[in-house]
Image (cartoon, rainbow, N blue to C red; front, side):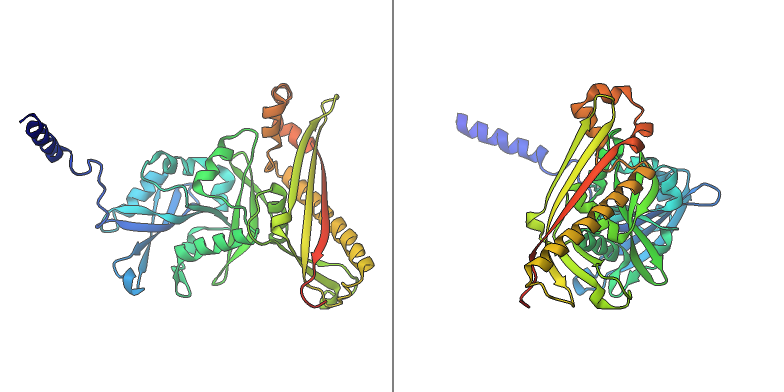
Length: 373
């Protein structure tokens, strides 16, 4: 009898605890796949949003609508858009957020704050990028080929991350360096050229403001210098004098990613001078070299020396650009906070960072040349 009473009590409790108290029904929601933020001439925030209708997605016929709204804040501009569409707006977990350069130069964080505060806003897979000019113009394009605009941009950013042209960054991983006084961050940099959306390079930030950029070619080496590379890193260098239209004056090579080695050491001298040693060991495979002669070991050694010199000079130029734009993307300040806290407290890092002496060294080693030889 006692067992029956206990079982009856448990069944009674199940009646009251079934269901989800925080259930969020999405059947009437509208999914936002891409959003863009710009500043109007009056200084208002202009948000452009791609809203996707997935009701026919099982037939491969997803459609999208482009809506925009202005406001004094992200929340207000979003509410303006909500007033124009049917159903509520939910943000896709693999979406993308774009910011125009005029907004990014002002200060990025105020336009991200609400996204981190909303518990239901996705962050872990959402991509973030800077657009040269107006970001909304890219969203207005609606689609490229058979892809809707948000899906196209997301796939483009991910593919360029795989090629080490962009650093891997999401809305979630962006927050720590954005709030870290000893670490700056970079983002993918896009532009619209006619009907094409192209990679412009890497956008550099000092604090929370966009200050400059690296080119596409510099971006690949920069990603390797950070120590956070993906699957492919390819370079094309001119190594012989003569016409730039002659393919025989150039060599194309690809990093042997699994064996790349990078080290960064921060040293503080007795006089307070800060030195940074950044070494990159770069084994490479030759992809294209019309002059060949790679069976000659002496020629290979000459190419190793020449490419090492070229790549080291490229690394020096990247560092100069970072310092000129106040972008401590390698986290030298974070190293000082962790290992030299007294030095960190005694300096004005904004003034001291441009005076840091970097000593980069890129060592190229040709380890493969295809099956030709």
